[in-house]
Amino acid sequence: MTDRPPDATPVNASVSSEQATALTTKMSSRSVADTVARLQSLAEGHGMKVFAVIDHSGEAKKVGIELRETKVVIFGSPQAGTPVMEAVPLAALDMPLKVLIWSDDGQTKVTYTAPPALAARYGLSEELAARLAGIDGLTESLVDG
Image 1: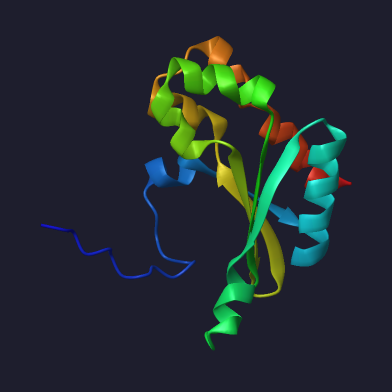
Image 2: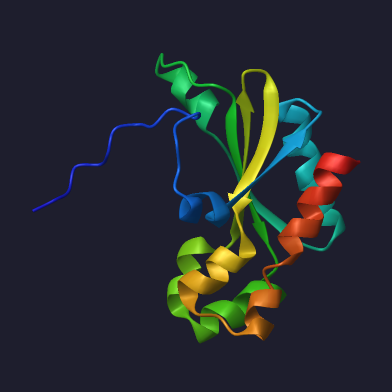
């Protein structure tokens, strides 16, 4: 038997405190496109590899569906992520790291899974969890600069 996915939930819908602490959202004063470009530049400048940018809204538009600007940047560092995946192979489901950059009524938002939530999900040691924490500083530079 397969489970039917739940209906889409509006952005302003209530979320549990557990869900809220699992995600970090920051505001960007730039457009979605400029925020994506800046994140790519910052990640590469910190020696990380940008593996992909997924343009959900662009793909939706190609099939005649409108979606607010929605892009996901997938990036990481094999030096940081590989030990995590070696210790806990299932962590590869969340690696490389992903940042959602999206428009919410004209406000660009930057959302990602909080490092403590990832660490808890996979039972990571403090040492391994620290390897994921760089996303916080990177996104602070993204939205501050």
